[in-house]
Amino acid sequence: MATANMKDVKRRIKSVESTMQITKAMQLVAASKLRRAKDKAVAVQPFFETLFKTMCDISCDRAFKSVYTKKKFLNSTLLIVVAGDRGLAGGFNSNVLKMAKAKADDVLSSGGQLRVMAVGKKAVEFFEKRDYDLVWKYPQIAESIDTVIDIVEDIIAGFRNGDYDKVELVYTTFVSALTQEPCSLQILPVEDLDKLGGRKHPSTIYDPSPEEVFDGMIPQYIGGMLYSAIVDSYASEQAARRTAMESATDNAGEMIDNLSLLYNRARQAQITQELTEISSATIGR
Image (tube, rainbow, N blue to C red; front, side):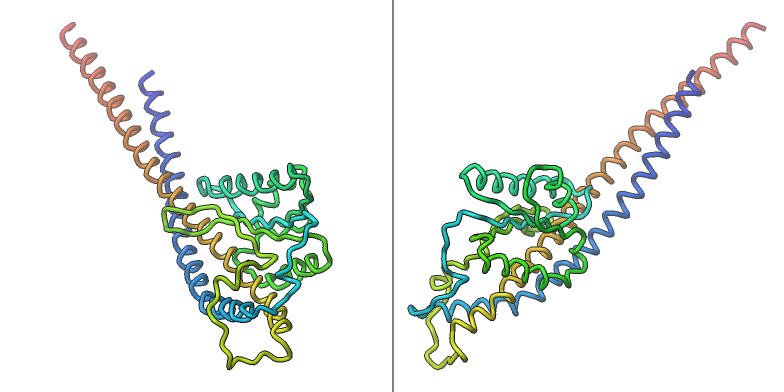
């Protein structure tokens, strides 16, 4: 009986060791991907900040008007949800999808119309299983996001055609290696640029007009926001996965220690029993 128990414990130790090797490898891969994602996020910031500042300067003009800053009252929303492509990342996907569902339910409960754009395999799977109008699906584009411009063109075309009067983005922002927070951001119509910008430079001349320059910058602006959100979300996913796999590796190591202690105790008990049997046989003679 003790021998059979020892075999089970030894088999369990080997199984946990195999799992520990996998979680350790996934932790290292996630850490490597996290560094690359952070580099991408940092690289895009100077361009986006300059673009945003220019748009703020243009909007400071009181006579400025644009279709992208005009509020409509159709009560129709496009919700862009950015989630991960894989699991095993702790509560990363569930947290952002929970926020997205709450936003979607708020729109529908107020009598509005809702369309959903899902970015990431987990977001696609989540909204496919539920009764939402999923109009665009973009799984597995986080590592190669060259299609962002095509996505932006679809977003802008729908907004200009009046398919929706508001575009809201839900994604996870990278706070630190241990903290990632889901957040939401309205990207259309563009609001409060005049409050965020500084004074208009009188020496700046926009040709053919400030409005046309502003409208021409909108695709790059929205593309930059979407690109930053996807990269930020991807970095958050890798950070969450690294933390989850580190915790799993530590738990596996603790489990191996406990199983090894159990195995050693069973082995010692077996040795003690064999010695007792030998002693009894010797005394019996």
